[in-house]
Image (cartoon, rainbow, N blue to C red; front, top):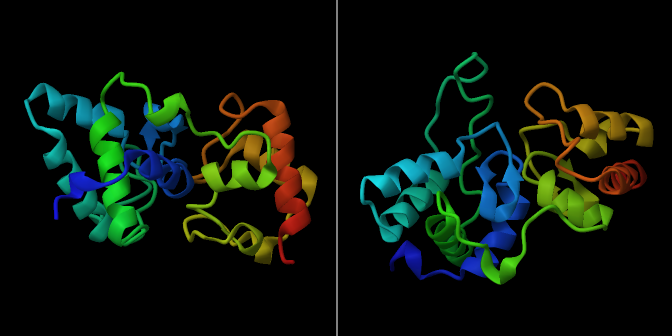
Length: 193
């Protein structure tokens, strides 16, 4: 089965919840800096004549068996991608979405971008779930702290979302002030419960 046989619209939703906090991809409104910039990577490959089915195969291969690279240095990745973030049809859908839109100026499926809207849960799912564990969001990320264990206050969560830290990107300018308040309130009210 070709990895390019997936549903790009569903792949966009999965990418937003599982991948967007680490990767840059314009079609998902993703500006993560922990992992590779997928627009830059695929733009160069497109210029060399590679096609979408090749891109889908590369994405699927990386998700199944992520390369392990030195982390933390100035010109190095800040963290390695966990293996099998998505599997089965979900993997085909994500691979199709990335293959179709990375490195292009095409609008995303339905013209929608990520970000999460206004709901604290939706914002968390779109921007934070791939890195953090939080039972209330069904998130099991392991790159950042387990928020159920940390139980941050609203003020602490808001400060972290605004400023970032360690491998976490700053979301000031990426999320609106009301979105930052909503996600910080959601985390503070949900963590450890």
